[in-house]
Length: 155
Image (cartoon, rainbow, N blue to C red; front, side, top):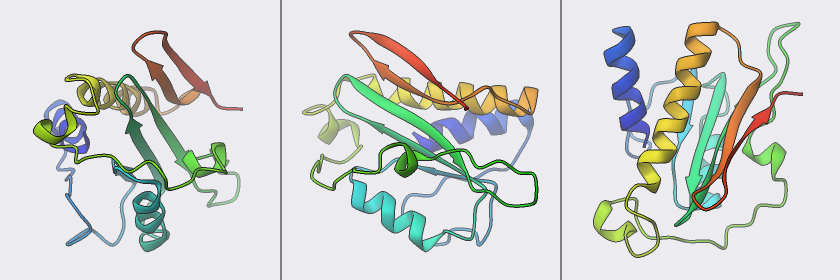
């Protein structure tokens, strides 16, 4: 998912953003940290390991027919408002839901064929709007293939 989003942004803006699979060779600082992992525990470990390295954290997660994209921002300089991230919005997340790999072969048993690409496209659209407008009135999506989706408003 991250590689798909990053590739589209690089093509559109001529940037040189990079996607990483795992934590090796990650940069020591970045504007956006996008996590797309299978477990709550792995999200927590990544955020703890890189807590001082990013400004915005975007979490992308999904099941077979639903998911979320949540962009949070740490409070920083004076006057910079914190935007709640995935663990701020869902304080009681537990690491019980261990899924198969995000590889196409492994994920088809628990995810629809296009659910990962839908999540990546929604995330990419949100980043595109943020870069174009330099502002958003929402910071994510909840989506369900059966019921549609809803933007998460910034309050």
